[in-house]
Length: 317
Length: 114
Image 1 (tube, rainbow over the protein chains, first blue to last red):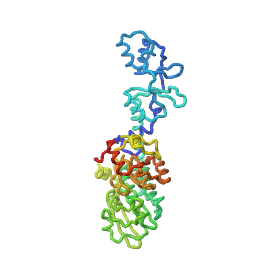
Image 2 (cartoon, helix red, strand yellow):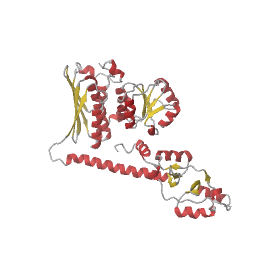
Image 3 (tube, each protein chain N blue to C red):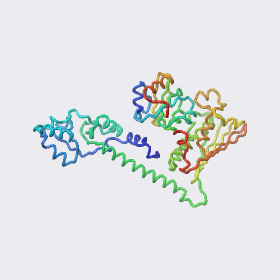
Image 4 (cartoon, rainbow over the protein chains, first blue to last red):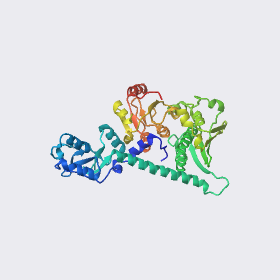
């Protein structure tokens, strides 16, 4: 996991991924609807729980909670079975539903606990409380946090374990012109590689955007091209070289909106004349040279230094 | 607002990634130019477009968009929905125009201000 843990989106995502069965308490205490109300209190107290599923003949028929008991006492504690004070046809959750669903149900009904059913058998297999959900999410966040830590550790060690005055990793990708099906595969391949190296997600995103735009330019205009990324401890340097018509006037090409793309390319949504601008916004340094009739050489440098990760925040927020 | 609510309220047809409709939608962006979306859409936006080809999915994945809504009753290419399913990005279809959809989204409370 590479996302920022301060982002509420991460919890959302985890909530989608994790199921109620991951959070629920499997030690289910149940009670029969024929149990006298007077016996409820010791059971609740013994298990330190706020509510109990009421089961008759293996079927869930209701839920009885501390609140029901308090109301019963307030009403004079008249002797009666649980059946008379319980909440009938209780809301239950299924073990295979997402935690996000559980959170929504808690919010919707204001309950503090739900019985959890197995979808196939319909049997009660657990109980889940708000606390269980929060604990499960926190635990998972902690695990992810550690895993992320390990990944950074490993990545940084790639360089530390190498005995050399200077070292770098080199990744090489080939780009084929006019192939719109494969278009984007080099930049997405590089993106995955950088993620695995444990590079900061914001930096990975900037590299992905810059190389995607450059790759698209190659696909649109050139016959073939190459993308070479050199990663060292300080920076990611990407060179994209293509073999095609080249750019006669680079200064003009850098102007927003300038494009020489043919109509069929524009119809695909490319050729907006924003590509080079997007690259420039993502890169710490960009250098482009071209020989007409031969091709383009584009160099992009992005620093691996968290203090300099300002692109998205600067532009977007 | 959850993407699922938008789907329900606007009667969108979900073509792929139906399990990923519980994400929070922050806003929306309308454009048919990929570089424009890369430059100006925000994470968590739904993207309203008439583009049907699979490069839209790459852009949506790169920007972390909530989903893609295709307008005017257009139908995406099969490769597009396949790739979107892989990336778990919902593609939704509408018979409305981009303008019509924008109006409906405003009515639901998704405004243009950031």
